[in-house]
Amino acid sequence: MEELVHVRRNAILRAFIDALTRGGPGGTPRPIELHAHDPLRYIGDMLAWLHQTVASEREFLESLLSSEKRRPDRGQAKITFPKASPLRLVESEVSDAEIVNSLLDKNMEGTARPLKVPPPLLSKLWSQKGPFLGPESLVLQAILTTLFLVFMAVSC
Image (tube, helix red, strand yellow):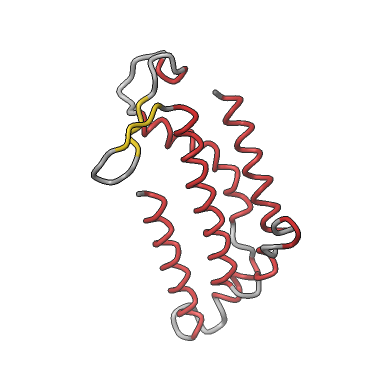
C-alpha cells in the first residue's frame, strides 16, 4: 500500500508542476503560471486543478479498494472493503471512508509546496495602503471566498 501511495503522490506532484509550468497537452489549457499577475485567477486556477484532482483521485481509490453499493438517497457509493483487502487485515475502529480519506491526504500532500503563494503576489495584495483600505481588499475577499468554496466542495 505504501508503494501505491508513493507512486501516486509523485505522479500527482509531476502533473501539478506540469499544469503550473507547461499547461496541458498541445498547450491547452495554458500554463497556470501565465496568470500569476492576476491573484484571483492564479489562485482560482490552482484550486480548480486541485479540486478536479482530488475528485478523480478519490474515485480512483474507491474503485481500487472497495466493492461499491449505491445509496439511493444521495447517489453516492457506500464504501465497504472486501474481507481480503490489505487494509482490513487488522480489525480497527476506522471506517472505510476514513481509510480512503487518509490515503487521499497522503497522495495529495506533495502538492502543498508548489501551492504556496509566491512573494510578489503577496506584496501585490498587501500594498502600502494596508490590506483593508483599497481595492486590494476586494481581491483578498474574493480569494478567501474561493478558498472557502473549494474547502466546502472537497470536504463533502
